[in-house]
Image (cartoon, rainbow, N blue to C red; front, side, top):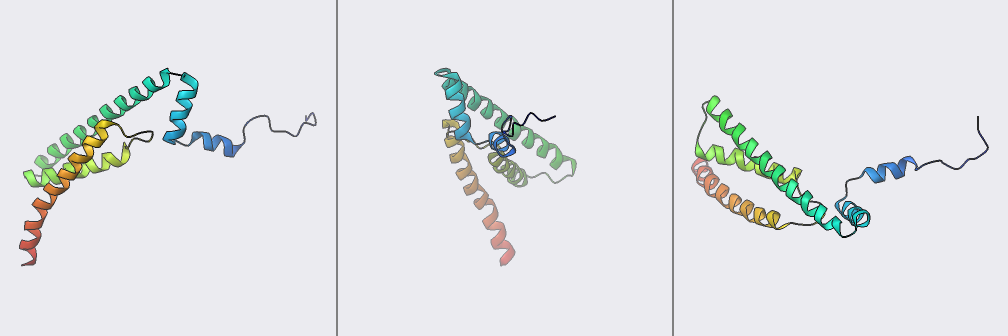
Length: 132
């Protein structure tokens, strides 16, 4: 059965698991090595796909929350903003770019900062009302 060769015939389990790891720098380097100059265009295409996936996820969440709030008869603009903003924050965690920070991500960060300011503007008067 065995020909006396004790060397492994392929990569070990640790090597296979390390190659499955989704590290953005490794992906970018692998693309650039395998594609040469066209690797940059592929990364830009990936960022474009990530952007539209992110937008679709947030829009889907907002639509779902709109329908849900109307269905359970709890619609208010403040509550809709709060649940939509939580969806945006969750989508930021799920779709954070790993290889480099694109321009759309930096602009979206400023939208999140503004969202936190608006959230504070909504919550602080209610909390003061609750405490007093």
